Image (cartoon, rainbow, N blue to C red; front, side):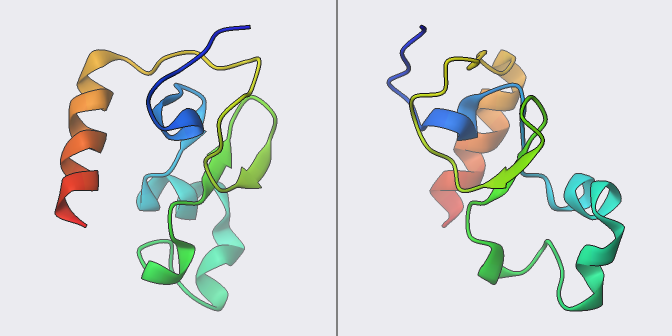
Length: 80
């Protein structure tokens, strides 16, 4: 099982947390709110397990996201 020193699912290639991708994947999401809102927090979709979740560590199916994604997400985290 791979171990990760970063932020668990948030850095996995299977984790989808882009608001536009979330709204495309879950069309009913915009009925009550938006994936762009702060109430979503850091939650996203695990494309591997098809679950909605807060990013956590310890998944045996973790695969690092491509380097470009690391840079984009790191910029996102520092803006908060």
